[in-house]
Each structure stands twice: as C-alpha cells, then as structure tokens.
Length: 212
Ligand SMILES: [Zn+2]
Ligand SMILES: [Zn+2]
Image (cartoon, rainbow, N blue to C red):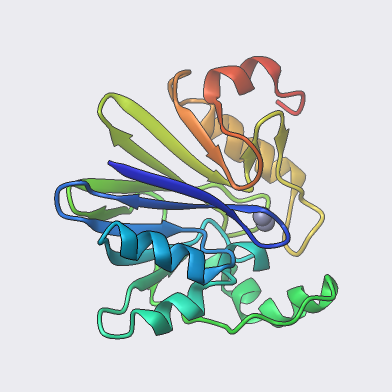
C-alpha cells in the first residue's frame, strides 16, 4: 500500500492519498484544499486516481474536489459522499462565508456511498461505516492491509477529542453512539487517521479519551 498524508488549507485538514502498489490505482480521501499539492503527489508516483472520497461535506474536506475533477477530466475520478451530507455540499459557499473565506468551486457528487459499501481500487478495498453526529452523513472508512487495520475517522474521532456537534445537523448523543457502537468495537491496535491533528489508536482512545 502507498499512503501519503498531507495537511491542507487554513483548517489544517488531513488529506490522505492511498494507492495499490501493484496497479497504481488510487483514491484521495478528504481533498480539502491545495489541489496542486495533491496533484503533484499523484503525478510523481504515477498514480491513477479512481475515487475522491469524502468523510463529510464540511468546507475543509471538499475544497479541492472540483479542481481535481477538472484536472483529471479525461479519466475523471468519481466523487463519493453519503447522501445525508448533500445539503452541506450544496451550501459550501455559505459555509465559506461564515468563516469569511472565498467560496471554493463546487464539484459534483457522482456516487452516494452507504454503510457496508466497499470501494475497491486495485487490490485494496475501503469499507464504509456511517457514523453520524458531527454531520448527518459523516462516514468513517476501514482499510485492512498487511495485518494492520486503518481507520480513517474524518471529524468523528480525534486523538483525545471528538468532532464538534454545534454545526449544521450535528448531534452530541448521536456522535457518542456512533463512536461507541462502531469505532470502539475495532481492534485496539487499529491505527486511527483523524481528520485533523495526529494519528492515534483505538486502544489509546478507549483508555484516555475524556469524551468516551
Ligand atoms: Zn467537519
Ligand atoms: Zn474538518
């Protein structure tokens, strides 16, 4: 597996580029901003971009989607989102205005993804978990590779914290349920890649996260 992670934009969103080493098929998870940096990695590593995957439709996770779709026009990657976040996607300009930022170009959602779906790229597969609470359509993704489980947690679970629930459609009780019923069931050694800040593991969060 190829895994490249970069922190993008004013909100410092963690964007992941994940690819199959054998076939070079790749996905970009949370292309929040700075499309040029993401494109450069894809190009340097000679990767074929198949999916643009979004944990949710907050501005800081979707800002580079349109630029990437335009750049890879000839082999256009499919943009994936849970449909319950479509209202946020449609209102990305309003989200930007709230933070006094210029509106990003809005991309298009090609594929709604749901709990239990598997997104396949090369020999890798990303399993979809629906974990509402931070937003109604928040998703986490599980990737198993070489005896290691990776969880891409978006803004649902952070090292020592959880996602805020005071924005559009957020709900505190719901995010706690999502984390306890779906994420904490994973193996303690699961590597957690959060949407912001450092990585952690399920075991560490079970023991030390004050919200859980
Ligand atoms: Zn968010
Ligand atoms: Zn975020």
